[in-house]
Amino acid sequence: MFKKLFYLILFALVLGLFALPFLMIESQPLVMSDIAYDAEQIDRAKSLLKRNDPRRLAPGEIATQWIDEAEITLISGYILSQLGGGAVAVELHPGRAYTQLTFRLPENPIGEYFNFSLSLSQWSDVLAIESLSLGTVAIPGWAAEMLRGYANKALLRVPEYNAAMQSLNGLQILEDRMLVVYQWEPDLVDRLKDRGRDLAIDDEMRARLLAYSKQISAVAANPALPNEVSLTEFLTPLFFLAQARGNNPVEENRAALLALSFYFSGVDIARMLGVQLPSGKKVSKRLTLSGRYDFAQHFLSSAALTLTGGSGIADTVGLFKELDDAKGGSGFSFTDLGADRAGVRVAEYAISNDTSARKMQDFMTGRPSEKDFIPDFLDLPELLANDVFMRDYGGVGDPRYNQILEDIESRLDQCRLYN
Image 1 (cartoon, one colour):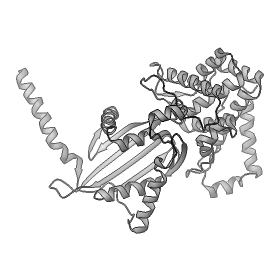
Image 2: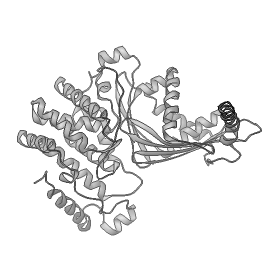
Image 3: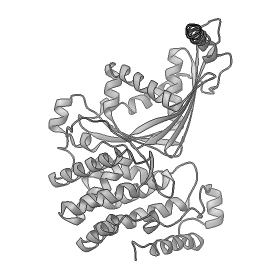
Image 4: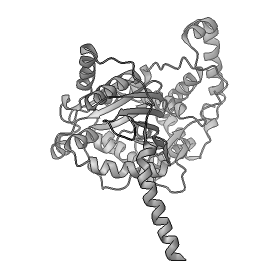
């Protein structure tokens, strides 16, 4: 009985493996490209690849670069055209990316196209696979993540891929585009010796950032913490550490909030500063405010800009200023403006003077809820096309626009922190 069952299972597996190519290869393309790769398009694609080549940077230099959906499509399509043909469609939203790819196969009896669909979500410095489809075969997210891990280990043996992965030190997916932080590392030993010489960060700030980076890693590694978690779960332990260190409260608060901003943006602080920490498994979380990833994004980038104010950290990385300048294609949102203002208020209160800095530490170590420092902004107008925004609110400075701003400030005034 058991022997027959074993052979039956074995036969089913062999049959499944035999049928797999017929399920993964299709006769119709999933994506059609309207890009004609003439000399002009080829030159543009090559120019984009050259612009984003981290090898143009000096050793240890940090740079930020925008890449939008159209550029990703152009570069990917160009690479596919060199490999035999195909097309790519990319859709970017805050914290998420959706990709569809069609690759034209050599002539064969099964089919002409290999179609591929991928959905990714950002968890600080990791892009996790949410769903993956190869032709008509849907692969569960956990299985796709396992395959990605195996593929990454294999690809790390390729010098060019390894160098590219080492140069990447931060990523933020926004509406219609992504912001990438590069840090070129041609030689690991030289990097550990020389990194940080050009950063306008003194030794005390460097030590603070490393201390809070370790605390963040410890919090993220807590198995009781869900993968998607409120920002407050990190703020409380960070300010416990700030209070316990007992040093200048203004600078401790500044470093704590900056470290959290870097973590959210996927920047490895130790690597940025050229410090080698004990190896260990890194855990990434998807941080939210009011249940939304983009609110945490706006809150932390605005806080970081307020905290740095043109200091060496902001000037060198350029990340927070780039995020602040981003004008997404989804339209104007007063909800985002509310999250921005909450981030500014928290940062201002955290570093105004020693008294307010200590009060901030007392407040945050009291395990506050989100509503204690960021009110409900979800009912405010958002995703307004420019013509609708101008029609209904008249633009910046119009009384109708100012009325919404006053409402935002009034809501903030009523939060427990600002009382």
